Image 1 (cartoon, protein in one colour):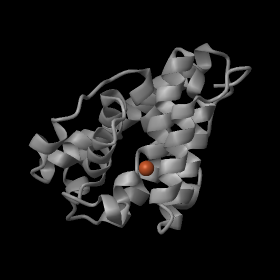
Image 2 (spheres, rainbow, N blue to C red):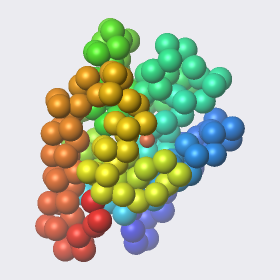
Image 3 (tube, rainbow, N blue to C red):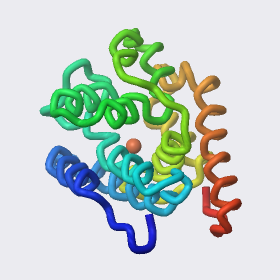
Length: 195
Ligand SMILES: [Fe+2]
């Protein structure tokens, strides 16, 4: 959020936790910094200061499940969410991490529906903005269009991956969320982004 409102303790705690957990994964950490910056850019679309803080905390922590010490079922959205739940973070933040970028579809393709269903799933300006941030920032934190990001993701995961198997279902969900954020930005008079 811009203006006089600064990030709360939860946002700082989220950033510090991600920085510690991703210390051995510099590319992932740079991506995370980029996603958090992107989330800050669109934080006004979240609807309120408190919603913006939930968005920023989730943005910092959305990929912590890649950390080796958190690896459990081997599906990073759920591994990250399990850690947050165990550490006492609000269930809403754990749910945003579990379900970030339409992870449910990939979870189903991997036979992990029961594991991800333990976490609440929301469709809201906050979950839209988290998709926008994650899907317009690539590895190493490079800003990219959602089209480029999705093409790069498919290339990295490969044609036989669960990500590729659900892409036809997942892509429209991600694109519509990005579009809704762009519409909210336009309504607020913010300049169009590169997404
Ligand atoms: Fe990410």
